[in-house]
Length: 304
Image 1 (cartoon, rainbow, N blue to C red):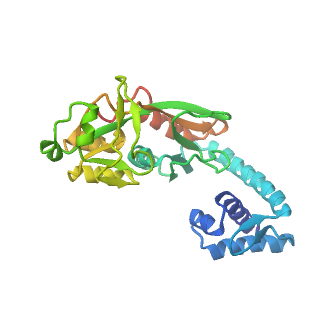
Image 2 (tube, rainbow, N blue to C red):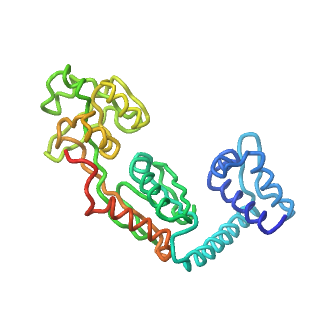
Image 3 (tube, rainbow, N blue to C red):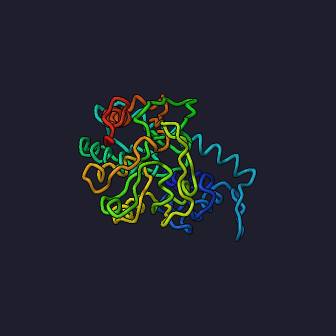
């Protein structure tokens, strides 16, 4: 194996450890499970030791494998730092910018923002990882992450962004033929659409001090916010979804906000990044644009 191949095999081994399987690691690295296995087998042949005990049902790192895995992480971190030093000498943003963001906020806000950034800087590339799970920012090699809710900032810098708001909305066609909707208790008489992961039968305390109950028997459930948005546009009923997802439809009149002031409390949003990466022009460019478009002083996506 060449030195380059060895580093790639180390990356594969770390990905197997982080993702839990050859198949999952292959999906992350755009490799087949067979090719992942070949990289691991090549390392084992090079070292003359078994790194992973494999069976049809499970896999586990051996004692030697655990020790070697820790050294692989250290080597890859040194490589990353060396690349950062080289990038830091560049006068303009360049190289790969890796960002983690929640699904809806990432697709609605940060995918367009990154597109603008890429158009402005020819030598820049971006990898936007959309997941509502909390990633290990440093361990997984991300330059920055967007987080909703309380954050733990040990070893990280946190910059506040606009809060994450949910909006109750429905199409004008639905509202024209539906019962009156003047108070939260009226929701029980309406056709409501819920997110199956977090919303069914939920309740919250509104900013007005009212306890709002979302109907437990909604007419349509889905595990994806954009599917619920499209159903609401088609007149299926009332939807409770993030403001950033509904903003364009609200502005265009395709949806109308209902019961303003009774939505759940807003949640804080932060841009997180390791302090040692701030010197990189690519990260500085991302931070600057993010704060300009989504910082605390920025204009919210819509006005109720």
